Length: 169
Image (tube, rainbow, N blue to C red; front, side):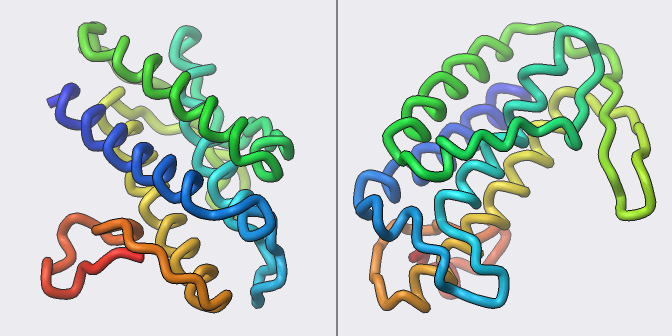
C-alpha cells in the first residue's frame, strides 16, 4: 500500500512540475486574484511545507504541521520549487521499504488550538496528497481568473471525481 501512496504523491508532484515548467515567473508570483490574493507560488510552497513537516518530523515521531518553514523563496522562485520537489520525491521513495508498524504523533491546529493525534505513515502521506490536490484546485481557479489556459489532465481533481467531469486545468 505504501508504494501505491508514494507513487500517487509523486504523480501529483510531477503534475506540479509540469505546471511550473509551463507558466512564467510573473504568473507564478501573481497575487492579484481575490478574495485571498495568494499566488500560485504560495500554494505550491504551502503544499511543499506540508510534506516538509512530515519529512522533518518522521525521525523524532513528532510531525508538527504548525511548524511549517514558509520559505518565501519557494513561493517566489519556481526553479527552487522544482528542485525541492525532486528532493522530496527521492525522500518519499526511500520510505517504501521503511517499517511502518507504529503510530506517528501528528500535531495540527484545528482552529481552537493545537491537538496531537496518531497517524500511520500511510495516513499522513494520504492526507498530504489530498491536501496538495485541494491546493491544485485553487491554482486552477487562479489560472482561470488570469485567463491562462493550461492542460494537465486531472490537475486539481480528486481521483474520485467522475472522469467526464475531470478535465484538469
